[in-house]
Image (cartoon, rainbow, N blue to C red; front, side):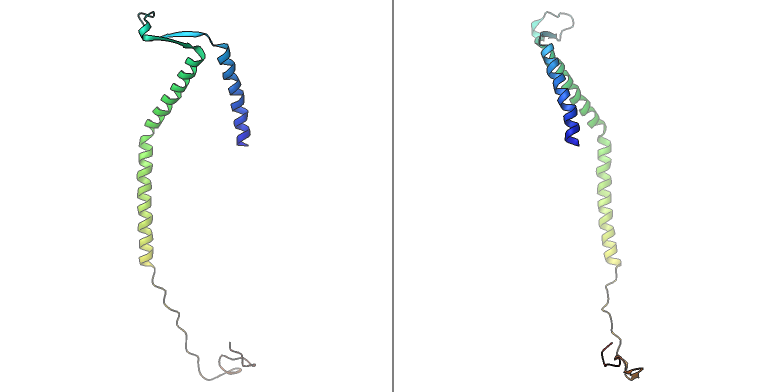
Length: 130
């Protein structure tokens, strides 16, 4: 199911990106000098589709980095809580091991001597041991 849904999204998205790239092949000049846009030292030319794809990728990377940095305190708290839980589990196992009494060997009661209902105790009418 996952492969089908991925194909359902990725294949049309690929067609849209290829169509966009073919339709926007013309070159645009990108300048980093807001005052003098004709300065060739701070400008370069590249296809429009490539510029938009690069800007989109940089936006995704910048957004992912910002989210990752913002969630740092939660990851740190999770590591701290995991270490505390691990030590608590180890302490609990030690306490359980210390509190559990050593299992004594089961003691057998001596066979009573004398006659029972069917003769000697511990035997039935056919003299089988009970």
